Image (tube, rainbow, N blue to C red; front, side):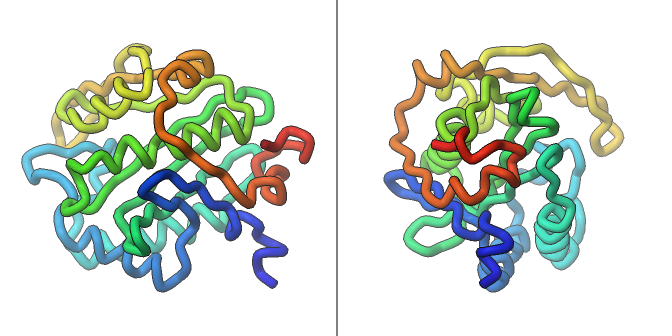
Length: 219
């Protein structure tokens, strides 16, 4: 069976309302259809790469291609886990957890997006809490980092709620304009102090070598 060769297919993160996992091909199609509709206001760009400026059909195709690319380029020292977010079987968006040289560095970074009609319901906090639990409790991370532009108020609010602290500024050229992004950092200690969302992780043990970890490191 395919899962024997790619055990990430069996990895599940569950919270009171959500399930995060790799999507099937049909579910990947549903995920792509979410970005046919705008997922943010047209006068702001929350992403360093303005992929949502593409025409709707190209946006949808880019979601599919990016997902396939990250699966195909996965390596234990350079991985990006793109988990579809489900509520009652419906695809809501995407939550990413990524790292380079994780076995030594023990640092992860995250990114996400939600379909417009699913925003403003606390889903962003719950799905980020899920991957933080995977990182800290499951993989033994020591720190998690994220970033957000000044205009990304919802993302910044999620980070603040989960205990992230300011970690400097970065400048980007986006849409021909210089934008300032705030780096944010979450230590294991602050994660433990701010964890409020119950999270269950299943199917992790067979995946540990894909994250560059020995089986004994699992949780």
